[in-house]
Length: 307
Image (cartoon, rainbow, N blue to C red; front, top):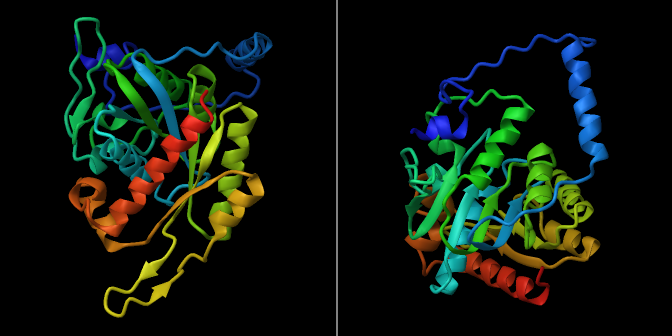
């Protein structure tokens, strides 16, 4: 059998899905959907079920896109393993509409299936990874409505053979929508890492994200301030392009820890574009050390507040 039929037996070809919307506000179909939603809410939240073989799940989230969440998630996972090579770490790319992990981890191809019809993650740098980007063409847009996205997330969570992992890092989509709620309600999560840049608009959305996790009883491990400072490569003058210490002030307001600062540096961008994350390609650089410090802070926070 193929991975496509495993993932969506009712979708002929994942590489080209066209959704036609015929809006009929008072149609019988819409009324039936509303009734099912009402019945679902009346039953309460679903019971959380752990992912087979995974000890702790860490979600990396942001209130808005463009703040470096996926780059942080990938380097956090690599930092966790670099700090303790006895630990096994995996990455789940839950950003269905804009998967970045295949590019960041330099992975291409389709997952193979086990004899139990589970997808095998693709592996690079010792990190098993699963992403919707492995299941569609690289430039194919994913034009799906909410129910299809929820089904995709369910398959990515439940139909993957992760083996045995100490940590599974989930790269969440930006915002506070259905995917975030579905993941937090269906699997036990050890903690959330919120990524933000220092400017006010990003911090406002980061606060919304942190509050969402609190409402669904997921502990916020802390904030990461990305693109915190730019240092001129010629004169070493430092400029806070997006403002200074905004995330630190937000962390104090929320009563959570500041996990670390990541500089705005050409090395991070270049290594990410090449699919060679800075933690593995430039391990002795200050940028790699910054990510490893964040990883160490995450492990310490998990030990202080076990789920």
